[in-house]
Length: 468
Image 1 (tube, one colour):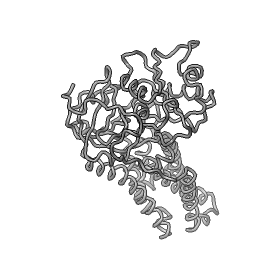
Image 2 (image 1 turned 135 degrees about the vertical axis):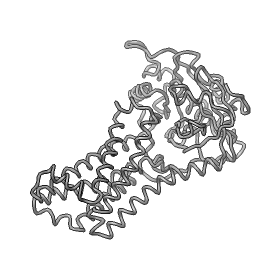
Image 3 (image 1 turned 60 degrees about the vertical axis):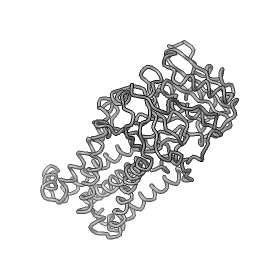
Image 4 (image 1 turned 60 degrees about the horizontal axis):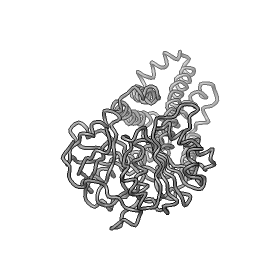
């Protein structure tokens, strides 16, 4: 273990009153999901209107024209969805606050596959339409397009990159790839979109025949890549340099579990809330390019940031041996599993294993009367319980309750401590509370089913996964 320097342990404070200085909080956006959906649909309608404006309907007087027209429309919407994909994962804070990272990730996945099918349709319909018009075979027409039309070969290379990204996004393939390999392949999506843009700029009907549409599409590309530059690069770089983050301490919490303390300048001005997470990059020789999505495990206090890591794989195991003084680069904060999402007065926090980390911060920080605040913590053995002393101290200070449930997952027919009977035995008024979940996916899904059976509304159930 590394040499330890202050802070030696996270101080335990009782709620918001502990703050000695005014802490920055994440900005709240008033945008609604319907607003974003309406904007995206409106742009889609405008794309079709522009295609009609430059004469798209005039070519539909023959089968060759119909197929070519379908090829043009699928190309336009394929390019549009490729840009929407990038926007969804641009880490724009207003998008994440409106939808949550889980929903954004799911939308990104389905939009990606829809984009791929549209691009396949573009190639098939356009080639077939041209072949009918030229009275040649589809294979001969495809060869002519590849070898004589400008930028078609380049666009085909971009399409091959899209296929590679899509194939590695299938769950079966994703599980077999190392994160670094998967991430590296996905970076080629940017190159694929750049190649598609050059193809669209050179031969796309909107660009060749309609200056207004040309400006519109260039603006779409500019806004998309502007969001990426600001939120995936500019803001993280400026924030990390401004706060000059470094590892101050590494403390063992349980077998295979360590807390990493990070200090820096003006941390009270870092807009982060309990329940959120950062993408952490620890600037070691071979680890600077690896991003780790870890939650804060202590409430923001303006003095240090703490995250707690369990050795679940090669990437997290490396962090068990990281050195004090290592510089830290952060992206974020991200996540909407915060106290600001609450709909009711009371709260129940349900954690499994290392999933206690964001809930421990919420337990310390969440405004609530102690009688309206409870924790259920599931772990396999006593040795695997993390933060027991801290949790007990917070509970004592706040007049709240922590219920530890030890043991392996129950078999069929055995009582489940996170089933309906187990939850209501601890918190009889659970339907009148907000419930925060964090732990293994199977645990959270089971707890959600139990909560629904107990008539807890979906709006009062808050959870996020960290497997993106």
